[in-house]
Length: 200
Length: 200
Image 1 (spheres, rainbow over the protein chains, first blue to last red):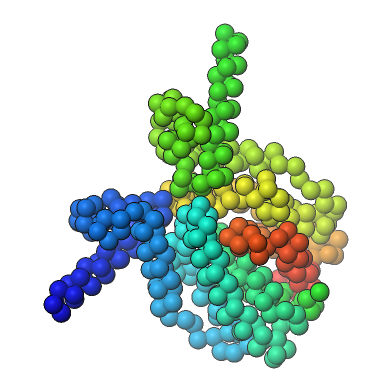
Image 2 (image 1 turned 180 degrees about the vertical axis):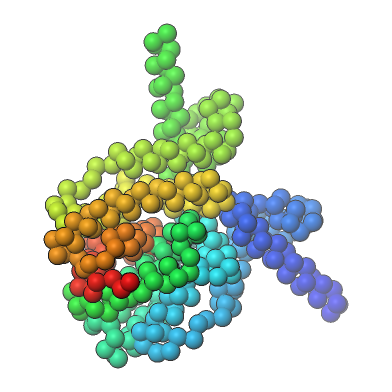
């Protein structure tokens, strides 16, 4: 019994790894039962045992993305504004692992926008990320490193900036080496820190 | 002859309209010959006459997106920083037409990232938009409304901010009514205007 369960778990992990590799190479548009089966060297029939429909495959892919994102090591960023900077650097595609994750995230928006449930799952993911960022921003404000104003509103602006930079960097990787991404982020944070309190 | 050519043109326009409606409703993942045929009330066979493969359909969709984006009326924005603001407002999903276009843009990234040619076409589109924005920024700088520094670098930051806000607003439309999007943009521009010259 125990061994059978272990085998089943091992097989599930293999399937997940294959899903991840297909996504990183081909995006959500290329994520089909056939492609995952080919990556795994298995039959499509075996795959339908795990994923009866494409939608199940997509949901699994998004869960995987959450897990991998949560498991990624975070930069040690110090405190205050330095911690805000570190959290934003963690979003950017500065290394191969972060590039693969971001590529998959960006790809997932097409599927998410066509499906209200997935879309609101995604919005909730961003809201959670924003709440974490707002806490760091509030600390930076209390240290006098960022202007006064609703930390959520500042977090939303900072998150938007980082997301847009992710898109640009993925579409034109040669134009956006890591140093340039970091410099653009620093331009943003420097202006933010110098700005007046948020207007009401 | 003339009438036949006119009929052909009219039919092409009908096909394009159907492609657009499928995209706006279902994104690129839902853009199939079958879906366009159903929208058009035609056979898949007729469609393959226009688009031998899915890739041709995608390219046509991206051309349509360019045409529609170019044809969209622009805000009259005054001069200097006001013109920069108007150009950025033009990017945001503030009305149904801009929302549909943006939804299709965001959807197209999945397909583009899986295809180097489409990906570099996209990067070139953003570079053109950035060049236009940089001109407006240079004027605002010459009027003393924005700090000194490379206008392309400021344009890149502003474009990133707008793109990221587009994504957030599309995924959570109820959270991002037009006033809130405009206010977030104004927060961004206020900080930018108050910031120091760009560091080298």
